[in-house]
Image 1 (spheres, rainbow over the protein chains, first blue to last red):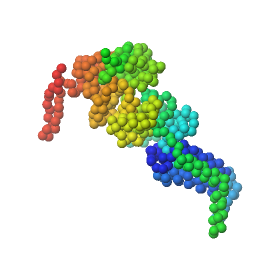
Image 2: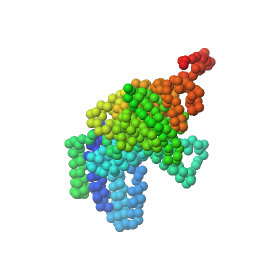
Image 3: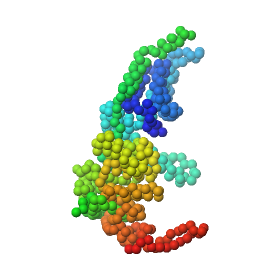
Image 4: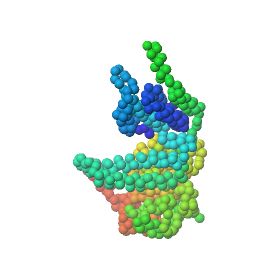
Length: 258
Length: 265
C-alpha cells in the first residue's frame, strides 16, 4: 500500500527525490540532536510530516498504523527511564513528573517524528526513485543495488511465504496447529530454498536484459528551483527551530497575553 | 543462402548432481523461422533455453546466436540479439512499474530518454497494455503479465526469440491473444512448450527432444500427427490432428456427437 502511494502525482510526489531525501535527513538529524529532556521544542516539528501527509494526499491513519507497528522498539528503549531517573523535573496539575517520564515521552515523540517523516517520504516517493536520488547524491552504488534487490526480493519472500501458508492451511482440515519448532524449521528451510531459486531466476532475467550491476531508471532527475526552495526552506526551518527558542518565546508571549 | 539464427552443435550439459540434461543436441534454425521444441517433462527443453541464453555453460559442444558463440566473452552481444521469455512471467517482471520493466533493457543498452519513451510506448501499444504503464507489474493478471514480459523483451528489438512454455498459465482468451501476437512477429522464434496446439499454430517445424537428444526434426504436422513417433516420447497427437475426433454439441438438451476428419495426410 505504502509502495503504491509513492506513484502519486501530487506536488509533493513531483518534488525531486534528492530534495525530499536531503530535507528528510536534515529534519531527522535536527530532531535527534535535541537533549534528552526536550519535549515542547519538538512539537513544532510535527509540521514536516503533516505537510507531506496533507499535500501528498496520504491517509494519515496509514502512517500512524505503520509507525505504531514498529513503536515497541522505541518503547523498549525508553520504558526503563521512569524507573531509573526519578528526579522530579516538572509539576502539572499537582502531579509530579520525573525526569525519566519526560525522557521517555521525548524518545517516543522523536521516534514518531522521525519514523513518520521517513514513512511519509516513502509514501510520496517510490522506492526506486529514492534509490535513484541516492545514486545522484553519490551514495555508493553497491549499497543502492543491495537496497533495490532487497526491495524486490522482499516481495518474492512474502509471495512464497503466502503460497506455503495457503498450502498448509488447505491440508489442515480445520485443525488448529501451533507452529511446532520442527515444523517451523522445515518451513523456514523450504521457504529459503524456494526463495533462493526464484531470486536466482529473477537475477538471470535481469542479466538477460543487460543488467551489469548498475542501476538505471527511466525517468531522469531534474532539480528545479522548487526543489532547491523546498530543501532550503526545510533546512532553514530546522535550524531556526533548533537554535532559536521559538516555543519558549511563544509560551512567554501567551502568558503575557493571558 | 538463408542466414542461420540459432546454431547448436553437439551440445551437452550435466547438472552438478550428475544428471545428464542434454547429451549432444544439434539443431539449426534459419533467420525468420519459427521452430517448436517439444518433448516430455525432463527432456531438456528448459536446459537448452538456459544454454542459449548463456545462463549456464555447456559441458560439451557449442551454441551460437546469429554467428556469435554463446560464451562469456560474447554474452552482452548475444543477449542484445536474443530475447528470452521465461516460463513464469513473475520471474521476468522485477521493476515497480510496467513502464520501468519494459524500459529496463533499453536503459542497459544506453538508449536516450526520448528513444526509451517512444519504444516503451510502442511496445506497450502493440500488446494493448499502454493504459497499465504505471501499474505495479506484479498486480497485473497472468495474461497481462505474460504479454508484459513479451513487451519487455520486444522493446529491446531482439532478432531471435526463445520462449519457454509461454502459454502455461494463460486462460483461453489470453492464450489466443498471445498466439495472435506471436504469429505476427518477424523475429526468429524457438518455442519450447507442451502446448502442441499452440506449436501447430505458430511453428511450421518442430524438434522433438527426449532424454537430452533430438529424436525427430521436421514438419510440425507430420511429426505431431504421427502417434507412433511421438507417443513413445510421452506426447499425444494434438486433438486438431487426430484423424477421427469427436465434437460435442448441446443439441436439443442432449449431447450430440459427430465424427469427421479435419485434414488428411
